[in-house]
Length: 352
Image (cartoon, rainbow, N blue to C red; front, top):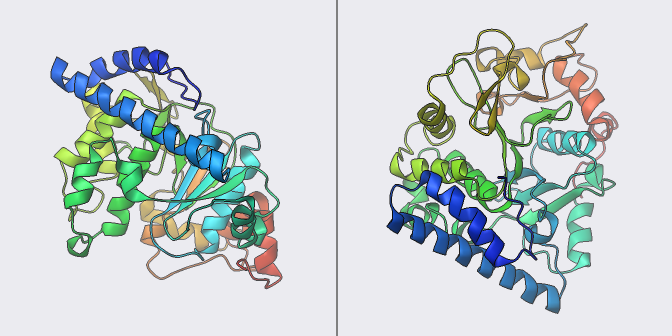
């Protein structure tokens, strides 16, 4: 049973539903009781906080926007407020592909959104996204996000200054906690949406033997998300690239579903979760990431893909979309984020 959490749900119903989920992934009764108590505390604290703020200043919060568990989630885990144009393209494309769903950009550098004026001010900061009513900007508060999850103890102990890949590791942790509390579909900010994903509850293969961490969708408080968080902490090796992202997904999915090797363009199912073929988001593999920035007179239509991951981490030289270059990435901007493309073409500022 999928759990659809809203701010007005009766706690008793939530407890009964969560109990079945918890039992699936807890090894003993003591652990089950602890998890159930933590979930209840999380729900109670978050909803109480929301109600209090709502009375005083009626802020826009994640719990109002994402109450249906159907949001499209993006995040920025650094303090920067002017991310590359690819980030804006990813958000714009998602807002176009999912017009009836909230598209939320969580930003670590953003302060509290307490009033409608605050909301309007941050929206004006991104003029190419201003006219999309389904796009929201919210602060990313790490400790609050990790509270009542297995990640909070790790977060309080870890020293970011000693972490080799801290920006990526904290992003991995944040997406798990965010999915646990809100549900929906998470996407990295270098994923351009090109058509609706037909399933809400899914993971995707990055290659024939690696499960992706860049795009996934689950309902709030799903047992697999809890498994992700536990594996993140127990198997923590922050010095090892990818170990806390695709490594977590691959280890957990392999444990639950066994070895899945894709050959033909056919998706599969793992329990109650759909498992997408690599081509759905990775038709161009990381070893060929430069193809996105090569001249392409006849760009592919990617008819079997739902989104395109542009492998921003591999782009060490900082290649960007250049209007008039006739590259594959320019074709993608034109088609899937035309407002962002138009602003760059006219040499207009994309931040105010």
